[in-house]
Length: 350
Ligand SMILES: *Cc1c(COP(=O)(O)O)cnc(C)c1O
Image 1 (cartoon, rainbow, N blue to C red):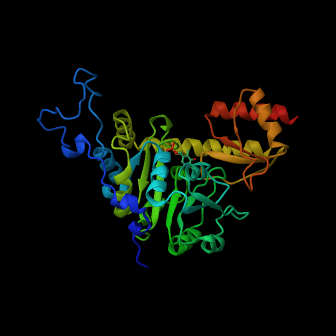
Image 2 (cartoon, rainbow, N blue to C red):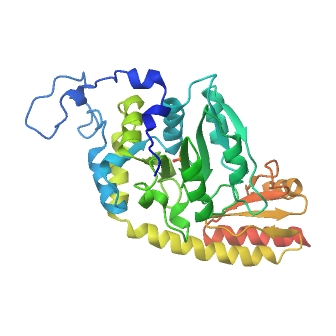
Image 3 (cartoon, rainbow, N blue to C red):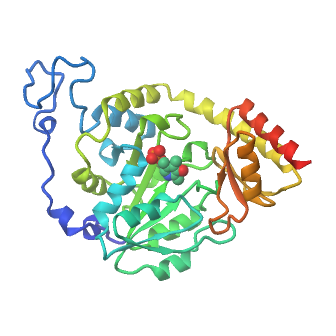
């Protein structure tokens, strides 16, 4: 293994930064019998909520550590994984200087966050099997290329990046590989969080928004080396995950069997939906999915999209993305919702 130090890639400004010390940093044990008169909280407020939340999310991280079998020092929580992706940009990418690589068709936030952070984007479209073009990525990287964004299972295709391609990229890419595993709990493949010790340049992000069914609480998770986690920790807003979210996250992790049952139901529904969709004349192709959605290629996607809207059903038009011509991304719903979709499409198919 070549020697690697994440600090060598980080912005000098971040390395030099003296982080904000919150009241709870200076004195963190709120379960002690001390009288806390240090944070200007109002003790007349709601007894469960008048205190600031734990800035280090200690209880929640320890529970996650237990469930995911990753050391707590390798875990950072955020206000959705979108916040974590933004922190990654701000630790590693110098505005107006550095660049990142994205591999469309993929999640749109990577490019938006790059734009917000004044970081330029090298676009290397995937091959026809929705695999990253490894040679081209390695050729296009330069000293200013800090991040490579990969998404597996990928949004909007539902596909997995092969293990071989992942390993080649992790070994040869000179920057940080950010692997977005928002849909990993639906997949038949293993998460890469169990291989962090092999790849010090790997960051994996996950979320409670999809398989866990908790998009509303905004809870994202980032797994990486302790070195990378410490850098991200340095710049995160002190109270980025609120008390209600930390409570709900903890409850969800305590009932983790629920996710297994969600997964089984959604996959069963997805298979049924796939079968029904394939019988429609205007459906040309459906990409095999490891997620809770299907990328469906149809004849005249724009027309089908508006017809569905007219019938009270909203799907996502993805036809503007490379390799997704005439593509609609359809989220697997409840069996009633799926039935309504199929009946509507059958009516339109005549
Ligand atoms: C939905 C989604 C996210 C968003 O995650 P949040 O935790 O809700 O911010 C991230 N990445 C991908 C690929 C997604 O589809």
